[in-house]
Length: 462
Ligand SMILES: Nc1nc2c(c(=O)[nH]1)N(C=O)[C@@H](CNc1ccc(C(=O)N[C@@H](CCC(=O)O)C(=O)O)cc1)CN2
Ligand SMILES: Nc1nc2c(ncn2[C@@H]2O[C@H](COP(=O)(O)OP(=O)(O)OP(=O)(O)O)[C@@H](O)[C@H]2O)c(=O)[nH]1
Ligand SMILES: [Mg+2]
Image (cartoon, rainbow, N blue to C red; front, side, top):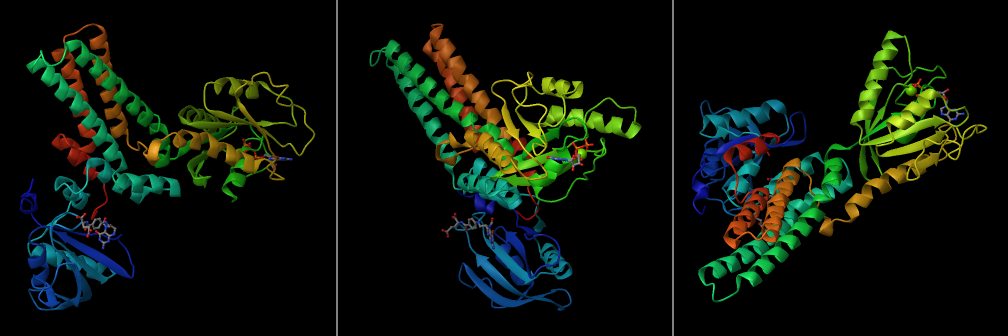
């Protein structure tokens, strides 16, 4: 792809968020970038300035000569640029009107409006970054916590790319040896080659397993851990939500049935992005509005990654509590004995619906006792999934995870093929498929629609 730099038209977009700011950047990329910028620029001759310089001047409408803005213009010539093409960045005064006017002038002078993600797409198509790095640009922009940011930066740095590239190299080496065996059977026995192939398949499979183990954490880092607070009316769910958020977000009263609708809020707990969901107390009711709330609670419970089951320790257990404990016994859950500032009527020992591996915490939303412990527990549950990951490589996209699972299936076919005594040239086909599948993760081999779809999720100007 050495000539890729000249294959595309020159694109332009506003690369900063829309709205009022001190400075906005209009970015151009393509082999006409400097010439097009020069048509609307009054100052030094941009076609003659040194690469990677920033230049003071004015943007002027080439049609009527009217002054549009006072600007700084960066000129960065290929190949050492974000896209590997010539890049010009016009730093405008950050108003919506002037910035848009600059963009319109560039379009009028021969640039094409960029599609979402098109700058990053070019960085990929021109070979500066692989697909996992392109995906991480998006993760980085959307990161909700420091941890999510760190993972994205590592991926942008190429950590996942290197890991996948190494696995593919392992496969390629083994395939080369199989070729030798097929072409020169006298050189190496088929038995030895088959043994080597089996070992390689098992090794690569093990590596894929440990990557796949991080996918759940990666998904949570991206989208937040959906955590539903459930319990019968009046046990203190909304009070606990407010304590966890450190603000009075949900309404709290002593009337059972206060929360009628779902209350959702993102919060960063010990580095874990949590989507906390307060629900209406679940009970049989004839109240029309409350009934809908109860239905919504049941759905939130079903969809949740983590459930916080709240019991009122100052009251006897009722059938509503028992039903909830039974309904959540298959989920990741934390059981809370709330109101422990009052005289206890039930204790963890007296509740027989509790499993031995359940996490149980005693809290008071009034005195704040146990609230920190809830946060630590959530942080611990989540971070234990991440700590296994080697060099902070975490699978963050469903696309990557899907391909890894597919690659693992290819390897399973290799392994079962060998064990069933299939001829080596047949087994080799599955090993080659695995090599291809892994190549799709980094974008070595990719269908066009995938690329279009992937980059279209980006922001405009990125
Ligand atoms: N003004 C501005 N700031 C920005 C960006 C940008 O495009 N423009 N970036 C956009 O996301 C990020 C920086 N990312 C970048 C990544 C690579 C290269 C680049 O030119 N790489 C070349 C040369 C590196 C070098 O000089 O050593 C290369 O890899 O070949 C530039 C920016 C964040 N800040
Ligand atoms: N003593 C004591 N009272 C509490 C505690 N937590 C909540 N309460 C009180 O219990 C009552 C109900 O609290 P809420 O937080 O509204 O309970 P809820 O579970 O959200 O109730 P619904 O929304 O009706 O399902 C309020 O009067 C709270 O002040 C606690 O730990 N100790
Ligand atoms: Mg409530």
